[in-house]
Image (cartoon, rainbow, N blue to C red; front, top):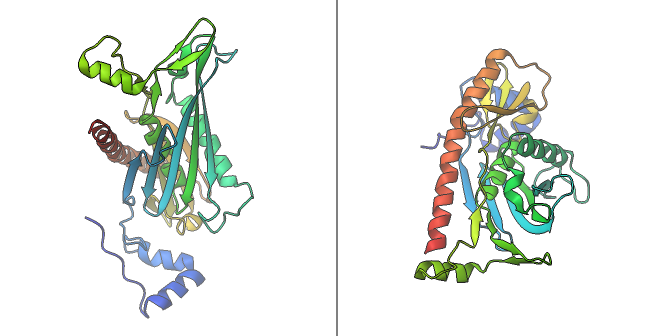
Length: 308
């Protein structure tokens, strides 16, 4: 059940908005002291989250994630490439984050975004070091050809906790990615299997009914949670209005078993205590289960729709 919206300070909604613009710290403090947020949430509650799969018809896989007002779109394209000389038995995955020009007040058309560069580096490092994608799954013929997988992430609306939303969009898109079965002849020509013909043959029991597509299997399912420390209180999933006011910001990324894959301190002048760190990790465990349940529901719905 959604939390009831917190009442604005006396004097009406217009005066409350003016007070928030002029005195943002005092505005937030009056809510936090009552155990609430300006959007009506308790301090330890994340915003409503939704996952939509297959939203871009021209991509091999795609996902639209909404975390409150934060909206992120991830698209995946898979192309056949010559096997890398240094890793002949592995394919390659490349990720890039971009900020839409109107996603926030700080974004500007034509100007490189520092936030996008940081997110690109963090997510790329997480996918590589965390063992999320095994490059050997992207190998087609060792030493000859492999898959090159390109993940493009677009932040459509930046209203806080961007790392959490971007990672979830990438996870959802990669979890739904299906790679074509391909053959390579002696001349090195690559042929993709006909998915329609293979499906028809398989359903009729005829020879040659092997699956024409295979789903990419991920090594783990990382989920992150951003927590903010404000006047000694822990705020889960801060919004863009709350983030500049926080004393410290922590983003914890965990796998299904609760193992820590990444821990980032982004902004804030205070040093987080051991107690706050443990609280953030425990909250990330609970959040991870909730988010993975949403992802499985979205994958099941997509599979059901594909069969109908």
